[in-house]
Image (cartoon, rainbow, N blue to C red):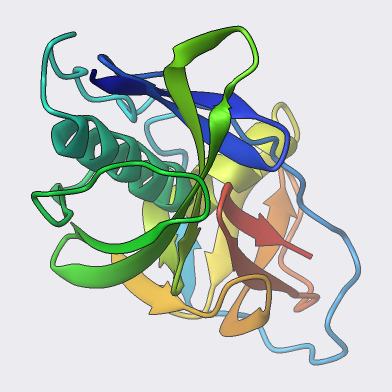
Length: 208
């Protein structure tokens, strides 16, 4: 019997014969300024606010490994919050069983992320679905993802943002202050040098 992936509290679920859905993170940029008052050099203007972050799902009868790889591609794009070349690879003989772990790899624009995948119980509503929890080894910060966050959170008031040379994409520790920071410049205002740090999370960048 094949199994599918779905989502549950603390776990996501894989359909043992098809694939499950994705989750959307909430945007939440903070306002606590960094004491340094340096005007940053990199200007970010409004990006594509509706990037395609949900690639086509595999066929319902696709192998379980292919279903899992698709979920990790979606998870990688969710962290990046920007379109980019994304791949995933898992061992070809993955067989979900409660407590079993496997290691998979995804890439985003050539940047490598390892995922530790732990399988849980079958979903309560169907034995055709299995719960799983996938933890990435690192986060991603993308320039477009940061711009999307800031223009989404400050919609209507932001003119542009200033940052300290965020690359197109870069790996960064999860849920920790990165070396990157930004300032939101409102319409009709000049930059003041008050910056907030960029953080990588599994739901996309955060600035606070």
